[in-house]
Length: 190
Ligand SMILES: C[S@@+](CC[C@H](N)C(=O)[O-])C[C@H]1O[C@@H](n2cnc3c(N)ncnc32)[C@H](O)[C@@H]1O
Image (cartoon, rainbow, N blue to C red; front, top):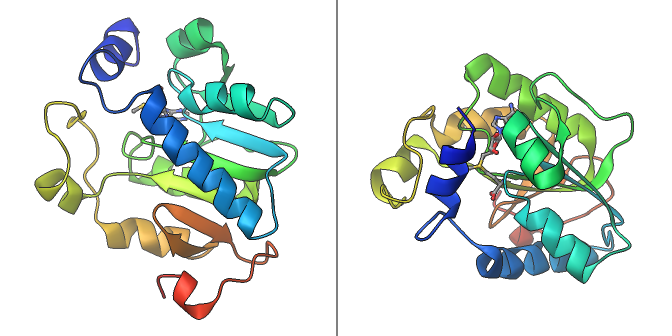
């Protein structure tokens, strides 16, 4: 499923996002973690696809130890990631920052639940997560640029599983419970 056509379609002209957009997002996420006193020295990019986050880190923070994984043999070969399925894999050591951008809508309910638990096990301090919910598919996403042939689950479905491990700070950023980041009351969503 995740072969050359997939990456051409969603990362070619008019695709979901590009290097410039990721540069804004990655610098914001990195900067927020630094603001909270946990400047990332190790980063795990889950479902890295074309590797836009990995490339941003290599260019802007070359000393950060970055591991990028993907379940697609094609993506691993072409873009240089470790071949891993996040629903069955946990790393030997946790990372300061875990990025999971546009991935969790692909596995089924059971695998996505396991993936969230594995992401939590892989995360020491901060998670950046973007996953479209059923409401987003109805109201927010650009249906031309987005893969709609995925699992449509509610925000509540994800929140119930994520909140076991994380506190939602907002804008896709979650901090690991017990990971040393203490948010002010109005820095978090609840
Ligand atoms: C929409 S792309 C996102 C790529 C990248 N994160 C980005 O935002 O540019 C989804 C990626 O998730 C990967 N993926 C899907 N299920 C996965 C799983 N269970 N474990 C690891 N990667 C997975 C796919 O192979 C694909 O490369």
